[in-house]
Image (tube, rainbow, N blue to C red):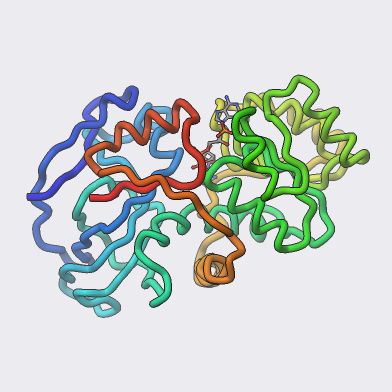
Length: 317
Ligand SMILES: NC(=O)c1ccc[n+]([C@@H]2O[C@H](COP(=O)([O-])OP(=O)(O)OC[C@H]3O[C@@H](n4cnc5c(N)ncnc54)[C@H](OP(=O)(O)O)[C@@H]3O)[C@@H](O)[C@H]2O)c1
């Protein structure tokens, strides 16, 4: 028997229950995985709340990394003992799980399972932002709304390494920590946020990467240049009022949706390689990792709701 987190009703962090399960043997095309580390993502809290409804009961989480314990019939690419990770495969908050072998990425020798659980989904999202939704050019000025988010911070650091000028926003208590990572660190709740941005970039920014949504989108609209681009990756504060007609009249492209649309076939291989290479090269810098015991998953969700955390979070079985 092994530990699993489940919710039987949508709601706050308190709906997450610690339960025991027997995982059993992998079926055709599957492996049984022992997780070393489980990545925590904002989207886990969205599923838990039922904003995107899921069938109940449900095991939260979409990513993890660990060691293959057993392979099912027909699995040739992996064997017991292989170190692997995966992203966007629901049901990861568990010490052990069955998963399709097709979903797995083999880890390079120099990438630990904890590092993989920390950067894979977040790094792939940043890669899709900088190469898929919009292909970032050196010299562009970008605004990252929520550069303090796990994904936003990786994106900001990667964009700077690629020669962009980066304006990043954060909550007032996180702005100082952000100064080292961006060219201009601003407070997302400042009433005159767009005026501050337009003093830095008088024509407006070329691209906005939006992670916050409702609370910051008015400033994003006011700060993007005519003919620029807004990439709506996340809406951590709620759905924004986009006002598509007025943006279209200014020639502003508004893009968004799941990052997975940019990670198909060869692009996924390229993106995964790029994420591990950026990790290795130090492009992501020091990533603060908050580790929670798997049984304290509810505490991890409380910390996200209270905006108490920075860096990336993992659950440890
Ligand atoms: N499109 C995709 O495929 C995709 C993939 C991954 C993530 N996402 C989305 O991207 C967003 C970030 O994800 P994450 O895992 O990196 O989240 P995270 O680490 O929990 O960060 C959440 C961010 O939202 C900010 N925030 C929350 N409420 C706010 C408010 N009321 N006003 C201003 N800022 C607020 C936080 O600011 P402070 O920390 O500074 O307080 C922080 O920067 C989420 O919306 C997530 O769903 C989308």
